[in-house]
Structure formats: C-alpha cells, structure tokens
Image (cartoon, rainbow, N blue to C red; front, side):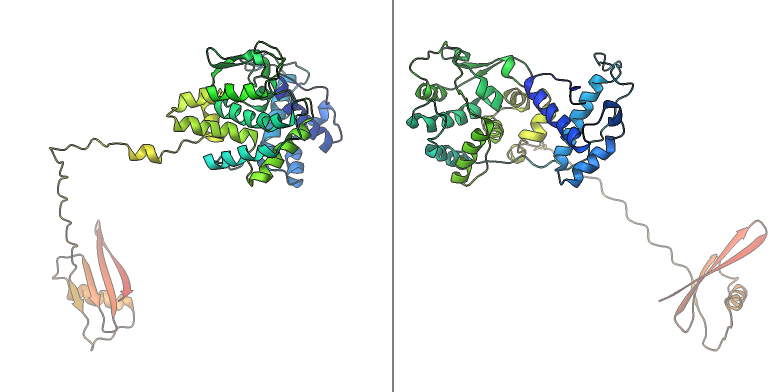
Length: 370
C-alpha cells in the first residue's frame, strides 16, 4: 500500500507520504482493494484522535489526489496509472477558515532581537556570526516572501548584486518554477556578514547552509520565540511580507505574484486579507452638487373604511349567535353595507358578513373581545 504513492516535487512528496503513513497506521497497512472500504472511516478515526479539522481536510485532499493518479483514467485525468478499477473517496470535512495571524513591526523587531542570543547553531559559522545567520533569514523572507525550502536551497550564485534580484530555481520552488525576485541593499549587507571569506558570490555553495536536522532548526527558532514572547514562525514572516507589500501599495495581482501563488484565492483567504477600511474611507461617491434630486412625494394612504355599528339594547336577550344574526338581518335590512359590526353590552364585538352567492345568502359571524 505504502509503495503506491504518486510523487511530484519533494515538498509534495513529503506531504503525500505523511498522509499515506497516517492511513497505513490507522488501518494496519491495508491493501489497495481494502482502502475502498475506508473512505468515511478514515475521517471518523482521525476525528477520534482529536486531530484538527483543517489537518483532516488536508489529508483527505491529498489521499484523493494520490488515488486519482493510480486509479482509472478519465478525460480530466488522462495520465492516471489505471491500477484500480475505481478509486476511493475521502470526503474532506468542512471547517471554518480562521483569519491569518497579524503581526506588527514591533513584534518582528522583538523576534529579530531575540536571535542575538542564538550562538549555538549553525556550527560552521563563528559564534559572533551565528545570530546574524538567523536575522539574515528573517530579512531574506520578509523581502522575498519565500518558503523554507527556498531559503535552505538558495546559493550564492543565485544573488545578482548588480541587477539586485535573487533567482529562485525550479528545484527549490514549491511549484517547480524558476522565479526572479527583486531584493534590497540591506539584504546584501547582511549576506556579506555571514559570507565566509573563502566563498565568492559565484559559488555553488548554499547561503544558509544547514547540516543539522530539522529538530535542531525548530529548537533554535522556538527558543527565540520564547525569548521574544511571541509565536512567529518562518511562514508567518512570509505572510508578514505580504502585509508589507500591501502597505507599499501593491494591488491584488502584484500581491499574488509577490507571494508566489498560482491561485488568487490562496492569497486572499490563507495569507493576506487586504484591509478595506482605509480604501472605503477614500471612496468619493459622485453625488451631483448643483442639482439635487428630490424624491417624488408618496401618495396619501387611504383611510380605512368604517363599517356601520349597531348597539344591542340591554333589554334584548339572545341565547345563541344564530338568534343575533336573525335579529339583525331583520333590523338592518335598510343598511346598504353587507358587513355590520355589532357591539353587545358585555363588550363583545360581532361582525356580521353577508355574502351573496347566486341566489343563496350565506351569513358569517366573527366575534372578538375589545
């Protein structure tokens, strides 16, 4: 089962492998045919482990992508491997999308200063240059808005000091596209601080060389976060770069290109949701200045039609509604109205409705208490 993963670039392969391992662990390494039975059970078991709905949704989408590629071909999936007669479907649970975290310039500065105490890693640099290593990474990501894979894969030859741009090669880009992103002089200054003397700018050596494991990387980063008193990961700095671009006046399309997103919805929903309050305050509604538009006056509301009212004398006694109807039909034949309101001494208001249909006369009696 675990050998049937469909892999693309390294980042996608790593993500797919995590989802496959999750499926194998939950169902004791099922065969491909057995997986067809586990579409909904997979979600239920993950929910039972208190996994986040967003994480379960991600696993379902990745498993669906894998099994579509090893399943039967179709017009929209012509390169499928046809290893299955039909592919299982893992229904992604719905979840409410949370607003992306927002960080201020002061919080960025706090984390930047917190790395002054990080003198343990990386080991190949002198102790005095190790804090600058981490601070340069922060500047690099805040200017270029790149991911960790690009940071750890960028080489000295990829930096063009003359044209002031960085080349993000396709092998270190998540979408496997070569990108050319502009940089600022301050980044060059910090890079000069961490560049070893025996390495020139045309070297194939990696700028942010990291020979340690991921555990040590995150240990160093969390140590700086604890010192600063905030939680601001490397991907949060990428989002912060989008916020800086918005402040600089970038529109939605420029923001999408800056964040390296192929879908504009990803830019707006998951990373940077532009604040529209300042924009709305600047909108000028074209109201005519010389000519004022006066709405036409509303027509007067018609007065409600009043029905004739007949009061019952206290001396009359009736034992049923039919006796009242018969009495007033005899007494009020002189009235032209077909509807008659009758008020009794006890406060009961009776409405007699005389409806004529063909030659038969129907009588309706409605009563209410005032």
